[in-house]
Length: 348
Image (cartoon, rainbow, N blue to C red):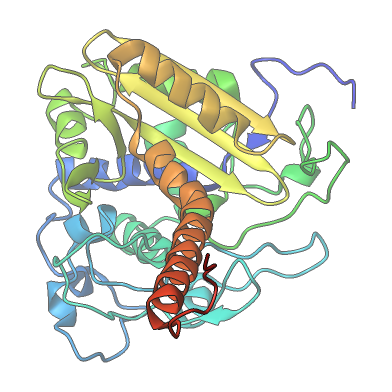
């Protein structure tokens, strides 16, 4: 507490990790080493999806990137204490530790392509895909292909507790909290600085970046929808429309103890926001949300969902109260109609 935090201070990014991982996978697509609509099984030798009631061959790279592959794990990966040994990638794929410490199986549970369903397990598969196709460990591939070319010089999947100049970890009351390790690197293990993520955001708008603008634009084409809204591209969240047939895009992340990150880019203006926090719940996401409203005038889909969730309890209480009042009124009305003559009446 009280230590200076600057543009080169590392902080965990939680699920924002998925966006750079998707960028790395798209580089392999750009090089012709991966086909977006090919079954992911074509590229895997170290692990395969378990048998299911659906067509596993319909699980494509595109659908994994966009959370539309029919996986129903909903991961949310669990933390590992500093002294715990991390499972191998294959061990995590066989039985991942969920955020509530439950063991979760990564399996196709609905028709691939039918609907959007957030899947951290899909990004474990993509991590394996990158390793198998590139022939490199995921960390090494990302360092060579993404971090070094973009001068993201402090971005790392190494344990945050072993680094210097970090923000550490705090709970929602502002007390120091344990710094955990994460087994799912592509899905949740990235630590980076505000400077690193600023350069990553700038790369989305720059033709000279490793990934071409054609591929960057493809990453924000809508694939995932919820309540009729386009919410997900290929590894990117689509927060709100820009008014130019495009979207404010990027990614948020959140873990407990309280880690929150948000990076959003508006391609219509060339502006972006980077917010990282530990401690206050959803502070970074709220900053990103307010920035998005300022940029476009539209609320983003994340806060819309949270508003719906927060309204459910008072709405339910309201419905119960209305029901109770209606029942009391009906009982009283029926009681008046059923009274014998003279009861409850006065006579002269």
